[in-house]
Amino acid sequence: MRESSLRSVLLVKAIEEVDRAGSVIPPGDRAHATRETLRSVGAVSPGETASDTVLARALAERAERLVGPLAQRHPVVEEALGRTTTPAWLGVLLMIASFATGVGLSALDGSKRIDILAFPFLGLMVWNLAVYAMLAISWLRRRLRPQGQRPARAGWLQRSLAGRLGRLVKDTSRVHAVLGQALADYASSWAEVGRPYLAQHARQWLHLAAAAVALGLVAGLYVRGLALRYEAGWESTFLGPSQVGTLVGLVYGPVAGWSGVELPRTVAEIEALRWTPTGGGANAAPWIHLIALSLACFVILPRLALAALARLALLRLGLSRRLPDGLHAYAADAFRGGGLVRSTGTVSVTPYAYEPAEASLAGLRRWLSGAAGHDVQLDRRTSLRYGEEDMAGPAFDLSAHRVADEHVLLLTLAATPEAENHGAVIAAARDAAHRARPPARVRVVVDEAPYSERMSGDATLAPRLEERRTLWRRFVAGYGLEPELVDLARAAREAPAAAEGMP
Image 1 (cartoon, rainbow, N blue to C red):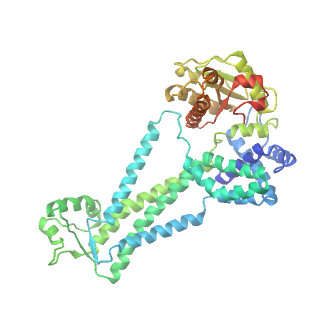
Image 2: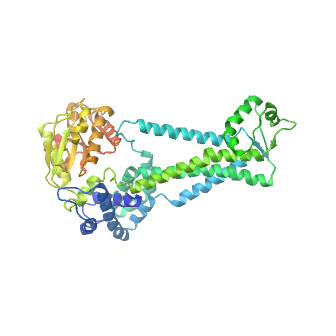
Image 3: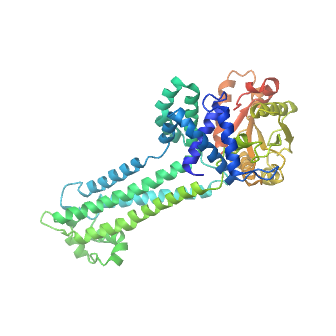
């Protein structure tokens, strides 16, 4: 989905989830946008759900139909969308500052000497090589990460967006509390769902900035060399001519071999470059050429290539046919009954490492019905026992999503989540939902009742319960899903709105 379309979808989604009364987007506008979108997109075969591609297009069209009139009534909406866009001027400013930094490095000490073994040239080379090593390690870690597991949330990104929208949200909340809350929710969801886009933007500009620093250093050396006579040489307290010769060959050898610029071959030639109180050094022109070629080969070109890869990644994200995680349920709510999303009123449930009582299942049904706004039927499936993680894939693939609108993976808060056990099952359920044709929604519901009953009467129950909730939220978020923490025993006794964790 295109980045701008995804922002519009997330903004409309945030408003619709908060604006139950229709004070921001009237119900008539929502219904009209849905009808026009369905007319444009068309319906699928009865009993089936549209593909991710069609759903993404439909959500984007519907959001665009709603955002236009919404921005006219509430100009703050357009401002919020703009503040979550990566500004082009910021990238240009970063490039100018980086190039100027490189030029400044070329004249850092104000002298007419170029130390062939010292900063800024070697410092820039070492820094970039260290970055390449870090990127390689990061790539290996992603490859070795357990299958299906995803990085935890980037809290710093959420805080950054919250800071950019903080004053806007605060000012809006004073005059329109619902819209203010929706804007805050939008910022949070964009930080999560839009993180791949934001990350690639950052990578692209940072790689370009690194290339600009090196380019500025080269430009500064050449420009100053036109008006000043530079001398190149070296001086060291600990290194002698033979060690310096080895180092020079290591640093400059790769480009000297094909550039036609010859390096000193003998110890005497290296010694002649050594600065002493009586002289030393040589014309810097050949060394400036070597520095420029080395920076081009090891900094400028690799950084430009990495920036191009980041740009390609952005294009791939925009052309991706996969609907981002978390939007399947929203698409189902927006288009159910309109010919795009099937609606059977059935939810299949698979407990893992947990045998829920009938009362808990009744509470689950009641809670799901309250969240859906209509009666829900449960399709209770065979429980997966602890140690049966290898059966999770086949269990979820065996028509688990064929008769249900969505699937619930039911866990217990009393258990401690483990990647090789709970993580494997969560990933299997998530991946099966994506592979299912037609696609289906998967929800991870964590029942708080067993833990609350076990700790009943303990004075530390409240803080321990919150610790467990935080643990499960972070764990499940690592797999790209949002856990829903519900006390099913309480949900069975009370109205659905009183159930904890209800959306």
